[in-house]
Length: 355
Image 1 (cartoon, rainbow, N blue to C red):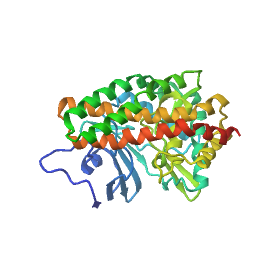
Image 2 (spheres, one colour; image 1 turned 90 degrees about the vertical axis):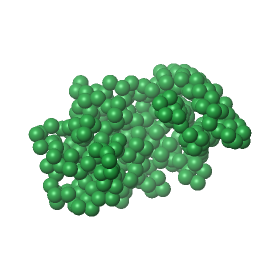
Image 3 (cartoon, helix red, strand yellow; image 1 turned 45 degrees about the horizontal axis):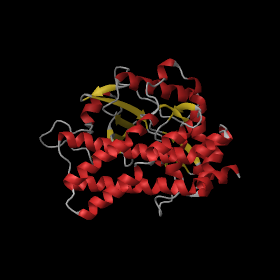
Image 4 (cartoon, rainbow, N blue to C red; image 1 turned 180 degrees about the vertical axis):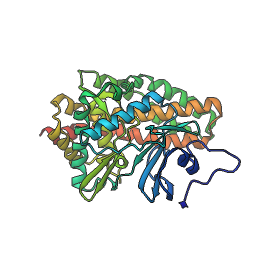
């Protein structure tokens, strides 16, 4: 068996986020292992590719905040999607027939690996099919069985915490940063972001927006293609009930982003994704006009989440100046540039769709 990243850490039973092949084989009968490696993409990489003499599989350690009830609902959702011919992965039962299990104290799920490569935003068909797939997901999950319904609701209410979190982060930066120039950079980014939190929350609350079961993280690494054919939609850990354009905003941030100017959005790609979505599930004009604000909200929620995580860790073990500077680079300064670009050019994105 080849193993690139799975050697057991010396002096430790299992590091956080580490899944041992032997532990997995005791619970699942997957065949003789040929290859075992971490998946190469994802913000929180807790998954592994497993190749055996029976085929390919993906083993995932769920987020530590995930409950058994939530994992059971995710499995029921996957079954519902597959029953509706949506390209979700098939769950592989354990040796005892369970659809998930605890491995080393963590909730673990194994699914069949679906062939394909990550979406490529330079390929027009990938833009179109990604938009259509998200619309199909929203339509198919409009009437879920009770067992598949997640408990999680909208995160938009947490935008209210943003300015206070930025103020606390600035205080931590003042403690840790020795360079006056670095501290001034941090303050400029925090002060620039703070007013956007209430403004974006108010913008999305201006009128009712249709809700849907949202995927929550549909980006390039969650969509697989073989050539121009979409083969799979992956990663259902963050499903929730939310305004459906917030889900579309996450997809647009991934598929329409200008990789050379990371704060900018390609208008033609934006148009292609939104148009494809609307071909499957029409959006109201009000929703289309609110998409740039929803994209701002997605970035601000990332700032809030990353900032809150740093503050939580700092309360236990003090963070370093490097940690603060990493937060400044990504996401603070990056997301500030993005929300400012959307503020200035959002009307151009909308005009491309509405004409």
